[in-house]
Image 1 (cartoon, one colour):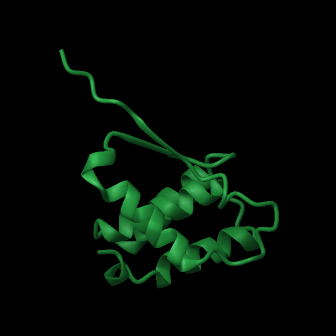
Image 2 (tube, one colour):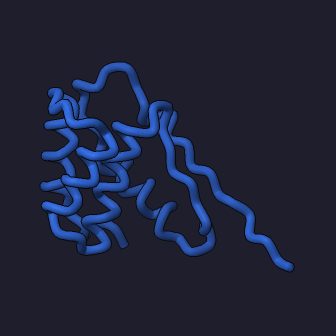
Amino acid sequence: MNIPLLTILTLILLDRSDLSLPIAESTVIDVLKLITNKNNLPILVTCRSGKRITGLIIGCLRKLQRWSLVSILEEYRRLAGHALSKSHQQHEQFIELFDTDLVP
């Protein structure tokens, strides 16, 4: 029986205390390249809280997978918490405006 190794991608560098600073689009693109690389599957994506940054990255992945924006934001809100704080609003806007054509 051949058991695949699990790739664990911990988003420590992205999980910073100052959430008012925008996340670099290039960083999100680099993370999405890692996630979508079949050589890295299966993969676990997490940040310190498992909510904010993870939710933003997975939201951009869902957009890359051509989910509807309504479904993406519903999943983000459900998993990140319903409180629409300033950082949640910024993340939702980032997901909405994210250009999936930048991910090869």
